[in-house]
Image (cartoon, rainbow over all chains, first blue to last red; front, side, top):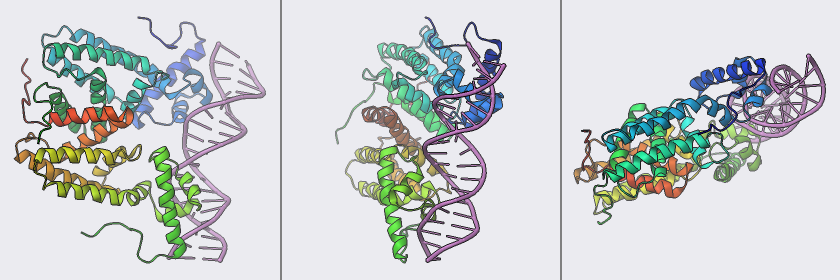
Length: 198
Length: 198
DNA sequence: ACCTGAACACCGTTCAAGT
DNA sequence: ACCTGAACACCGTTCAAGT
């Protein structure tokens, strides 16, 4: 699979490449400290470049995030593939869901960006998010085949669920996020699904 | 129970009272259109008052939100009380959870403010959020006594769960939010809770 | 081919001066 | 007692001018 987007291009002027790397490093620091809605001006300042240089390399905030997260998101997708070999289909799903939640909470505010990007095809993060969703879908389908997950749950449900729970954890405490994840996964069981009778 | 906070004060100069009402009306319009993170300057403009006048009446964005939502949040708390008389403890909880989720999605971005306010005691919205949480707690406890909800679920879990699901619905579609709510509620069942065995 | 920094339009918040 | 509007500090984004 060919990676999309303007990665650190093969041929780039030496100073350009240096600025590119500096911007990425500064973004990692600033995002870690202030979340992904941090000031871009601050990032440029810390990278020691002019404001416009940042826009030259990363036309949008999402583009910057994509460059920063690409490897980790690819790894998460790869993990999903690997877990298809796990002896327990259900445990594989649970393990992956926890990993996905951990990734999603890398930076404050990231979960919102990831949730937005799954439906916004123009986002530079869209492709990576799609890949993650598809990775989760395979684990979900396998668990459904094994009979441990209700049939009406979709990949979109799983994606939304993980993000919702990660968001809650971010807003309160990581422990609260963990609790909700447990409850949510239990809610996927095909047990007594809909007993809307009085 | 005495309402907290500086409500539309009993005695207020006529022009002050008029500005107060105008600001509230403008805020309702602007929040509905742009979400609760909308420009305060825009609200002041639309209310036809100077910038500083808004701050005179509402020192923070949360104070403005509180004044705007007070009645609805009180109603939600009252609904919880009323539902204690519902014949089915479990159905009462589900009905209320849906009502809470609907309230939470009144304005875009509101869910984040409500989630923040439950742990931020300095927020003008804190008291109202606490009251809502306690309302939910009573319904939760009753359902637990009836044996339809797992014993280890807490009021904080319920509050976080409703908000997380509402957030997901806001970020994607209301239908997706509904689906997650259903799954989450099923996850509260005391059925096969923790089968972490391979 | 890339970088710079000023320019523009927009904020939240404060506060002296008015009435 | 309340209102006004300027002031300050901070943004995101664009773009002519440089090298």
